[in-house]
Structures are given as structure tokens and as C-alpha cells.
Length: 168
Length: 214
Image 1 (cartoon, rainbow over the protein chains, first blue to last red):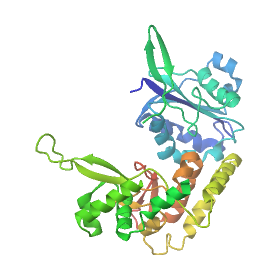
Image 2: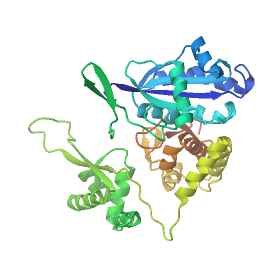
Image 3: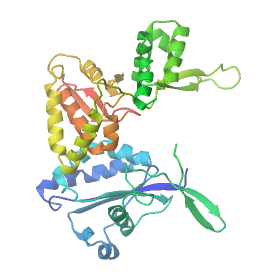
Image 4: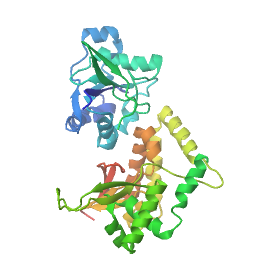
């Protein structure tokens, strides 16, 4: 155990509001896909609350019913990868262009959190904004540009983290 | 030595036909293979199999681990067996030089940016269905998949795929390329088989099972 878990957010805007026949199949599968995630090895937590006022104030787009947010925490990058691309979730994912508008910028982010931490929506949305503004880095990255979990080093009362050179 | 020279050296290790059979056996096996099993499958002596297997390890094509096969532990359990599996690296050379991987990556990036997943899947499914050895031709799907590099093996009633022929591209563009692969397999499988997402460790994420009514 590294003491760190992987947080993930991806967002997208549906081609039509929930309830519209064009996205009915997506909406119909959502519960099944979430249940599949929850029983997948390495799943830790997923965000279920609707955006609160603070999140809407910081990121007004989240109030749009067509704006879909998926934010969760996993034990490792590999565990998330297995679910996202190597389970039945891929069947749904491969139909993304039927249901979602084509993203016009970064729409997903990965970052490390201390085990037990539950990301807030503004925190998660902030990671996508970070990739958009600064590119990927240890604080916000993608599968294609992975960064290893930090190594926790205890010095006095403070906890510092230093990058780990290689993982596994 | 250039990277190309290294690849020639590595692939040169496969020039020997016995060694090539051993490589194919281990690379296509669902689990690690010991010397005895390899010798028996290829029909050579244990010492000859051991010699060639170790040459393949030296070349970087196979990797090794040690484990007691009997399940016994402690004193008297015997020495752990040397087990072989496919190494991680990929090696390719082409004469004259060709760079289809660069073209593939550029095409994938462009298709992804343009959001053409559905068009790609339709083309992949049609290509699978049009395979002259594919569904309806009477050819054995297992052999068709083997010829396409999937290294299929039976796991009970399910045909699993030990190798992903699109590995490097799938790592980079997983949504796009795994979706394309699934569509290709859907096309190849036809009515008789059902491809399902059921990942095999280190292999392709699709497994196929025969439909009951056929």
C-alpha cells in the first residue's frame, strides 16, 4: 500500500437532455455501469451527490442537465484501466460519440489523493482546468502521460511528498 | 548498434526452427511453461528444450520465474522449477524500412480528434465480416484468430485471446482501438459466436463463446 489512491474525473455534454430518446440507451445503462464499477477490483468510491451551490458558482457548466460528471477513486491506475477499457464498460464507451458532443478540450483528469480522501467537485473540475491551462503534470495527468503515486515522507509534524522514480 | 540492429539480433534468435516452435508455444500458452512440458509439446529432449529456451531468454524474447510446481513447500519439496513466459518487449524489423506504426498512430489520433469512432467501428465490423476465412466460410474461427495474431486458447467453453495484435495503439487510444477491435471480432465471429468483454490478464479484453443454437 502506498497510502495513495487514484482519483479520476471525466466529463461530457450529452447530445440531448436526459429523457430525450437520443440518449435513452445511455441513461438506461448508467445504473448498470456504476454497479459494475462498484464491484470491480480496486474500486474505492464514487461521487453520487449532485453539484452544490459552491461547485455551480465555480463551474457554472455543471448545473446543465446535459453535463455529465463521473468522478471516482481507485486503488491504482491499473484497476481503473481494467474497468474503463477491459470490462463491459468498453461496450458503452465505444458508443460515446452517439451520446456525447465531441469534447473541445481536456475532459478528463487523474490525480493522486491520500487514501481516505474524497474529492469535491470543485477539486475535481479544477484538475481538468489545470490540464487545460498548464498541461499534464504530477497534480493532474492522463493515462497517456501517467505520473506515479507520491512517496509519503514524514519529517517532524509535516508530511511531504516526493515523486517516486518508478513504480513496479 | 542502432535499435534496428538490436531488433535483428533479437529476431535472429528465432532463425532456428526448434527455437521458433518453443517461442510460439510459450508465447501462446495461457500460463508459464516449464522445461518438461515444453520439451514434450515440441518433441525434443528436455536438455535441448532447456538450451533453446535459455537462448530465447538471453535474446530478451522470453522471461523466467521460479516456482515449485508440486505445491509442496519446505525441506524435501525439491528445487523450484524454471518457468518461461513471453517477455514484455516488442520487436519488429522491415526491409526495406516501413513505418506503419507511425502511420497507424497518426491515423488513430486524427480519427479520435474527429470523433469518428462509429465510422471506424462500422469499417472494422465490415472488414471482419468480409474476411474470406471468417464467419460462414466454414473455416474454424480459432484458426482465423490464430492467423490474425490473437493467440487463442480454450478456457473451458470460452475461447480466450492471449495476445492483443493492436497492443501499443490500444494503450495509447484505448477507447478508439479497443472499440475497433471489438467491432472487428463481432464481424469475424458472425452469428455462430458471441464476443464478450472478459479480459484475460496481459491479453486481449475480448473472449468468444459459441452460441447455443448452433
